[in-house]
Length: 441
Image 1 (cartoon, rainbow, N blue to C red):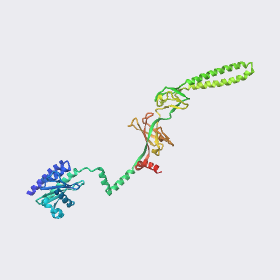
Image 2 (image 1 turned 45 degrees about the horizontal axis):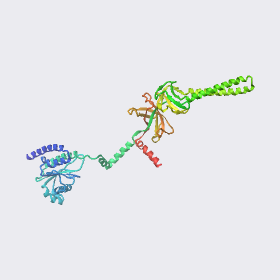
Image 3 (image 1 turned 90 degrees about the vertical axis):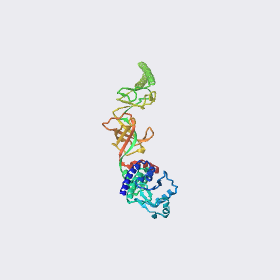
Image 4 (image 1 turned 120 degrees about the horizontal axis):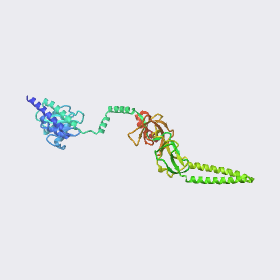
C-alpha cells in the first residue's frame, strides 16, 4: 500500500512540476527547478544537471555553479564517463573509470540515478543525476522516464534560436540536401518567363503637321499658347515685317520710276528712232521692277502664318520663340490631333531584344504611377540614333490598344517591351553574359 501511495504522490508531484516547468522563462530557471524542485516527484539528497556544450549547468543547494569547484569538476568527469544515456538507469560505481569511482563516496551517496532529458526537435544532450542513500525502485525508474521527458521538452522550448545562416550551413552539410537543392535550382532556372526590357517613352501625335518659318526673319509674336486648340485659318504667329515693308516700299518706288521712264521713252519714240531702242530697254527694266514688287508683296503677305488644318498647338513655351531669329524652313510648332496619338519609345542599345511588329508594350506614365496603357509594336528603327540624353537607342513606334482610353498627348513615362518567353536563367544572365562577352572580346 505504501508503494502505491508513493507512486500517486509522485504523479501528483509530476503535475505540479509541469506547472513550474511551463512557468520557467530561461534555461537557467529551468535548471534550478530540475535540481531543486523535483523532490516532489522523486526523493533524493543531491542532484546535478549536465548539458552537452555547457557542462554542469546546475547543482542542487547552490544558486550558481562554480565551475572551478572540485565537486563540480568531479561531476563533469563523471558525466563525460557515462557516454550516451538513452533511458533512466541506476549507476554502479564499479563500472566507472577508477579515477571517478575512487572519489564517489567523497561527493555522492551510494545510490545514484541518471536520466536523459530527450528533446523531440533535437538539440544538445542533457542528463539529470539524482543521488540518495536508499536504492532506486523499478516504479521510480518509470516515473523518472516521464520526468526526463517533461524537463527535456522544457529545455527544447527554451533553447536559443539558431541563426538562419547556421541552419542553412547545417542543411548544406547533408549530402541528400545537395541533390534536392540542385534539382530545385534546375527547375527554377527552366521556368519560362517573358523576356522584357524597359525604355523611356513619350506619347506623340500620329501624322502631325509641322508649322515652319516661311522665310528668314524674327518672330514678332505668337498668337497661340501651348496645347491650345486651333481651327483652319487661325493666326499662329507673326514675323517682324519692318525690313520687308522697307523692301516693298523701295521696290514700289523703283517700279513707279521705271514706269515713268518707260512712258517718256514711248512718247519720244514717235518722232525719234533712237528713242525706240531706249523704249525696249525701259520695257525690260519695268518688267523686272514689277517682279521685284510682286516678290516683296508676297513676302510681306507671308509674315502672318496661319493654320492649314485643325489641331492642337504643340510647343514648349511662348517666350522661347518671341524675338527669336529663324531661317526659312525652321520648325516652330506642331499641329496635332489629340485623338490620334501613338507611343514612341527609345530602347537603349544595351537592352536590345528581338522585337517584332505586334509585340506587347505596357506604358507606365510618370504623372500617374498607378495607371498603365497597353499597346502593340508597329515598327522598330533599323539604326540606333542618339537621344536628347545622348543615349544611343532604337526608336520604337507602338499603337495603343483599341477600345481603351487614350493617354494625354505629350505624356512621358517608362514602357516595358515584351519579346516572347525564355528560361529564367537566360533572363537573369542575359545582361551579365553580354557585358562579359564585350569585356573578353
